[in-house]
Length: 630
Image (tube, rainbow, N blue to C red):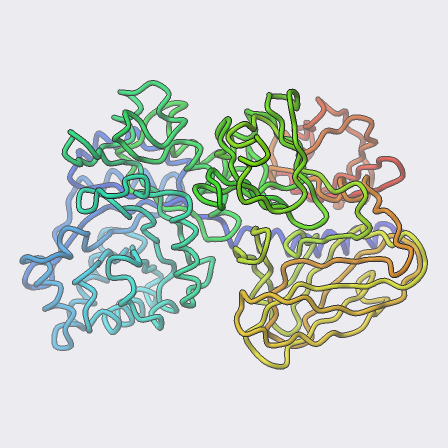
């Protein structure tokens, strides 16, 4: 075996471990189906291939703790299992949580005297009817003093029988009373990030379920200790009328069938508020970057064809639009209000902005991270009047560019003397997670970094030999944390830096070290020497006569490929003109050459299933991106 083949197989094995980890953390798409509709008829319209789980709602105990199975459930269960979709029975419900005989039955059965019998009856019910688990939808007053003990006992019983347990919870309606120790027993929690307003509170109808609510709810639950991969972001397939319609709930299907074009916005007729396709895609993008997936209430309210919200979710989940690792954030309103979208380096036409949930002539404020700039254009395809924004701008009114932008470019500042690395833009890592950051510029930071965890960033160029200042943007809530930097997988050590206790996990400070490095391009690594580090960015600056950064290297380093794994067409986030491209087949240790189908995609349908890498060579810069062919 040649040295190249040895390295290729070693590289393939390391990458395969990452792919296995990816499969274990598959993002969930969970759809609720109410059992008060005709399940036999509805089962034929379900898009099973776009779901991972179905929750049938609701089954509830009688005075003796027994549940009554609806035979119509069998159609859903059998068809779902045939399509590798799991089915849960959901017990409780918002209506019964308020009061009445059913809630009283719950209280009675959860009490210490009846709990063991009730848990056994629920477990037997799940096993007998071939459910995969139980979803506990107890809300508000139904989350009482017995709730925590009931969850622990039920989870223990279900897990012992290879079944799962989840919950549907909302911070504002009883969720704050859920003991945080139960988080370890739930397989995940479906966060009801909707109904912030409705018939009960019509004063601010636009806040029924905005993008910001999804982010706030994610931050609330993970801030209480829920692991991010157990946080499932709930989205509504319905809206509310806030006018002469007497504040009635309205299905998304009815809205888009009544109002042409309603699928592309969140409000129609000045009185009806809901989530259209752009907002649903925006929430899904946030969920796949930060959380464990999305939950839907409920599938029977979806539209069909190109207007389907489930199809919009599926487009994002399957990578038909690029993932976002943003260096700039645009906002609907001044002072960073309304929806927000993070944007990585790239060029965005109107259609590309709309696919990310950014409407035409709708941007009013913007945040830009150091070392980057955003060019805003009044017309599509980067034409018309324009302005350049290279710092945070609370309101574009004073630039005469409020609600004007139709296309834009995000790029590195061409005269920047520093290399700015976003911590979440690692090429490889071990043990860390990402989360939304409150630091200036927004976006994501790396968190949950414990002793022995690490991140690697490929193709970092030190243009000349000499001294470099390395700055780290850090936050920590403990004493004694530290990190170190190295080059080329530890063959060159750059030294250790102590991380101070900044007072909280989102209180940010900049620490630094000065190192000597020979000119060259390296794989730059950060190693957590001692636990308790959040990291937002790293900046590398030549001390003294700092040279301008190599723009080509930075732009190509930010290239994204998707979907991954891929079946037929591999897409690129930037244009491939004047690019030399080769494919490495890791199984055989050889290079392959494939023609570029167009400027931004590559046909890989002829490749055998396996592990590959794309090698791009542009102006002397070599960039490698790994992918799996299904």
